[in-house]
Length: 472
Image (tube, rainbow, N blue to C red):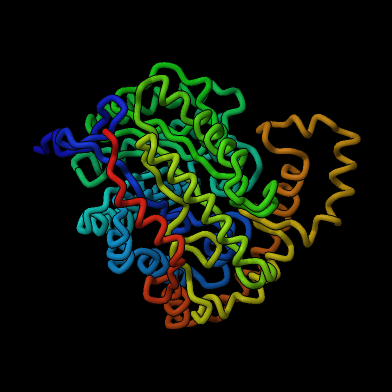
């Protein structure tokens, strides 16, 4: 029988273990059990590229490649390096399709636990807590690519069946992990986008009851609505729960108002932005977990000032960490590993995967096919007449949910990030045609820690912050 005192728990505004305050500091393992286009280089949505690769490779090679990919993406050396930076929590985004098939719903796939178990145990070995994050739920709980629904609608909120299936998945996960004290808790839904703002609250209450009937101990992490930015409709807090915001800065991406320089008004903007997102947590006297934040980074192909741009973005990161430290905010930066855009470590250019896909990655960048951190400069003039036409004929497009998006983003997402990207899947998958098992192993192994480079300046900043002691 596991002792309840061995679990992390919520005590007022603190996360504690044995009465001692624990500030969770770490990163998200995006691109692993929930793949994303900008992280590993494919176009469109994960389920589309998996379907395309299965057609090109056949069942045996397809299964082999993805099993090796999941194995190499996070291993012993990753855990050692992560812990060596003083970080103590790894958020594990997962896609529901590892645990259930759409054509065979409500039948839990226990084989989907293989790599999740492995990484949780590996992290525990190195003193790293984990948070299981359902990043993609049946039907899509948000309107973005990372919910892996293939469209721009969050149908999770329109069909109870999708919600029922999600509850069943969490019941299975809770049963499997209920006695694992190295797991900090369960992040029930990543970045919901409920346009009505109340269905998300009803689902959270339902999910809490379902999980608590099986697992009374683990902390439950609840993202704010509208991509973790809006908790203004939330009421009484659920017990032993941590509420989460996501705090990306507009100064950390292409198209920023200006190059961040630390001016008073820039600092105040960041302070106001975070205070607004964390207002609910302060109101209820609970802990704050910033489940995602972090700039993207330029490279030499982005222009002669790429290093200056990156230094400014490191300045944004440092400011945000200073704000979080003043309030004992737990945080999880996005992200641990990718192909060179945002990760703390990234796949080397001399690897089999990067050499094979280089022409495709360059084309995808010129088409602005991915949304995340995209610089749309190469296609802006092409799209502007369409944007102007939409504004003239359907001006309400600028008021469409979510309020912070305008016509440019809505149109770019539907045309480039969905339609064009879906067609690019065929081209991407063709690069894998005829590959042997050894060649597929080499492609997957490109993502192993030994084949990655470290973003040293980023990791130095995070390592230094990991040494800050909590105030409470």
